[in-house]
Amino acid sequence: MRWSCDAFVSARTARPGGIATATVDAQRLATFKTHTELCEELVDWVVSEQIPGTFTFDSYFPNAPVLNHVHARQRAYVGELKCNRKVWFRGVELRASEIADQIGPELRKRCAWSSWGTTGMARSRSRF
Image 1 (cartoon, rainbow, N blue to C red):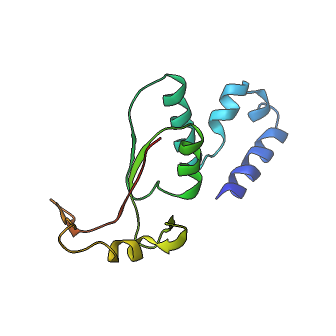
Image 2 (spheres, helix red, strand yellow):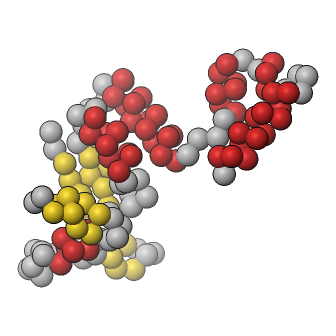
Image 3 (cartoon, rainbow, N blue to C red):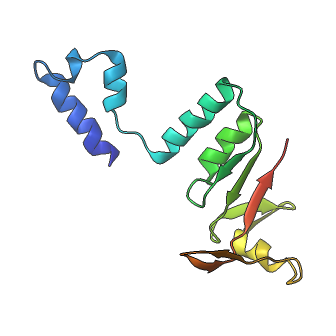
């Protein structure tokens, strides 16, 4: 997807009255950004505005680039992990589902979502 945006911007830049005539801010806004890049920008904005609290993510955003970005800003986060995500737990790299298997049934809780049915996803938590 990014390559088509780059090609579009290059083609527009070459035309008279194209993107080259736009302001720097307009050019920035016209450039494609991934969900990860947008999330990182939002994290930076929250940190710069000194908004307190823990970042909370659905299952899409707890990935290495986003969580490393939050961690670098020394902020806490909680997120729902997809079961195939790999995490380091007690010095060993495991899939989230393998960690969940180590939790006894008496400690597991199943969440019921009104329209999504029942899910028992692993959760990630970090505090500084």
